[in-house]
Length: 174
Image (cartoon, rainbow, N blue to C red; front, side, top):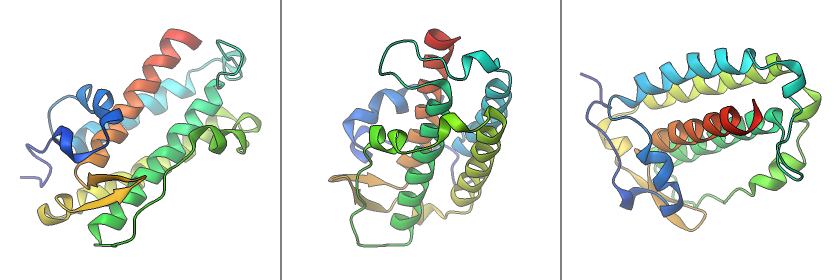
């Protein structure tokens, strides 16, 4: 039996603005969900036609490449927070200004394949981090961006964030 069997965070374990993300994650072992998502999203992004990679559905909106980059760096940030809290780091973690992160990135100069490979590397690292946590670790808490989170909430936020952006790419970009 996995530590993550029957785990699902309550609304008090993360910032309220992530509630919609978490609500869309199916009930089940989150490690298996992250693994399935990894294969599905990697296949999905590598099938995006080249002419769509720079597409932005509206002035000022991110391109498909920028969305993928945003997903990578956000997952990296959430995984770091989970690691810090699971190691009992008492320091509050900073927020992340997503628009500035994308603005100062070079995602549009990279290939979809390159972004896909980085996505895989980050997701594999996240899976290894989470699947090797103890029951005690996943219940630990910490502050990020002025809000208290449990370690348990982060893989669900990651999975829900991915579902959100994949839906946007399908509906508005392709």
